Length: 123
Picture 1 (cartoon, rainbow, N blue to C red):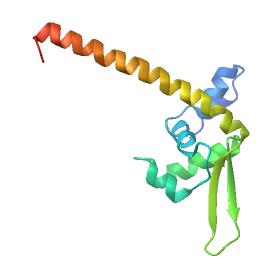
Picture 2 (cartoon, helix red, strand yellow; picture 1 turned 90 degrees about the horizontal axis):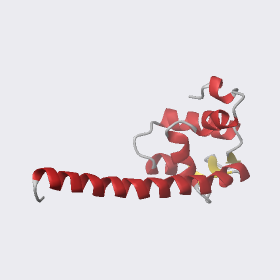
Picture 3 (cartoon, one colour; picture 1 turned 30 degrees about the horizontal axis):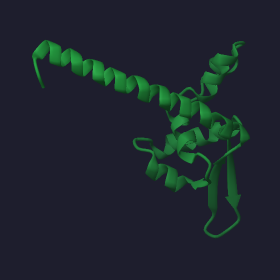
């Protein structure tokens, strides 16, 4: 759910966090990446998200111009989602976040292992 206090802030960083700041939106954007994908595929790929929340997040991403919803007039109806130019521009930022996490996640694991070994003897 979007927090309008963030989205209407005078600070550009705060507005950006208001747009992409919950746990699901960056995951959805990352999963879609550069492809078109159907709702059912997103639902199957993203763990622990309810269909209701996924629907809400997709609508908000579309409203914020990060996502395009492509509805095909077929029977049965088919809908696909793909990132807009704005959404695609966010992918390198997500890549940087992943690299940052990997760097410090690995360093933290190694540091904790050393602390454990020093404190408790060998593993």
